[in-house]
Amino acid sequence: MLSLRGFWRRHRRKLYVTAGVLGSGYLLYKLYNAHRQRLADLDTELEHERDRNEELIKAQMQAHFENIQRIADTTTLPHAMQYLNSRIAEELDLSHLTDRLMQAKGQSTSAEKLELWDRLKILSFTRMVLSLWAMTILSLYIRVQVNILGRHLYIDTARGLGSSLLIEDADLIHRDDQQKFLASSDFLARYGMPALISNIQAAATEVLKGKQLRDSFNATVLRATVMQILDKFMSTGDPHHWVNYLMPEDARALELATAFSNDNTLLPDVTKFEQLMVETRAVISSDEFGSVADIALRAVVDTVIEDMGAQPGGVQLAKVLARVARMGPTVLEEPSKFIQIILNVPEVERFFTLIYSSMQIS
Image (cartoon, rainbow, N blue to C red; front, side, top):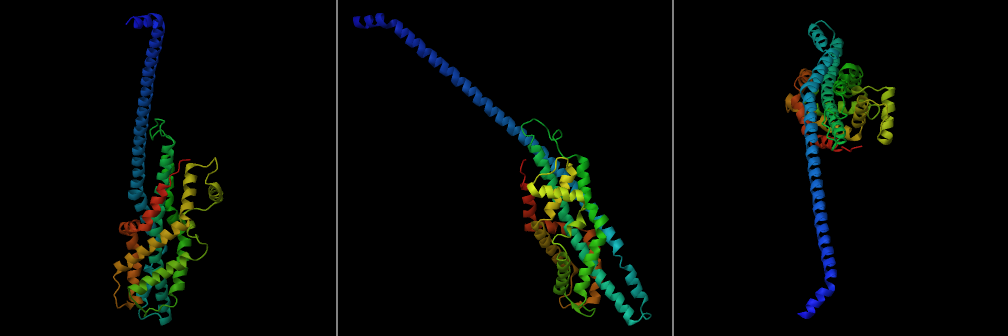
């Protein structure tokens, strides 16, 4: 006991110092640990805030994209089909031929009648194939436009994540440019029609030249004939010659397309509208789009032939022409059924999923 007291008297200063050091260290540890916890809590709160901000902007982006999609489905596409139908009716009016055939009964020579029937045969198939092709390609084209708009919306919005900017404040495509871009779908009906009709008519003339009015046509023969005309038309000229029926081709567009294809970037003075048009041309000029368009066309042709209800045993070609001529306006006057068939094709679904999912932020 005495030795313990002696030890305490001899070393109490050291013990006080040691206890002070240990107490201070413990206190500093507690303070540091509390500070570290506050920093961790702050980081967690900031992360949650970023997540909430990101979800908010994504929700706004999705709402804006859905609005673009709604405008395309309810306004752009119906208007484009209606305008297309009216232009085809103007350019390929068959009433003068049918009127002359009615008037020619018992008056014209056999050679004159055969010439009239031959022209009616070619123009009837031309009108049907033209309507099928234009409806299919134009609906795909407008869908490409909508997905490219959606992609730009995603990129422009994603660049602002974490900046507390709402979508209305971000550097998005101006609504005027959006409307101008979607309105470019009228280019086919407004400017591309004469050359398109001429080339499809040439393909129809080539395919039909060996087919006589008395030849028997059933569903199989009719489908094969339509596909032969389409294949002949699509394989004539450059691989993507038909793109120029849908979009303007000028020096400025070629300059931009060249710059875009070289390094996937554009010239600094490029407007948003020009960039949208260049990207659209790049998509529809791709082999992937050509393959999807071919599959979609075949699906539409199958449905149209089925709707025509061709007799299994077949009827003479002369009696089929009236139904062939009527199918063109029918497809364009009621396109929703055929557009849905196009969009339900698995290859088409995958193609557009790929476009919208390739959203790389640059």
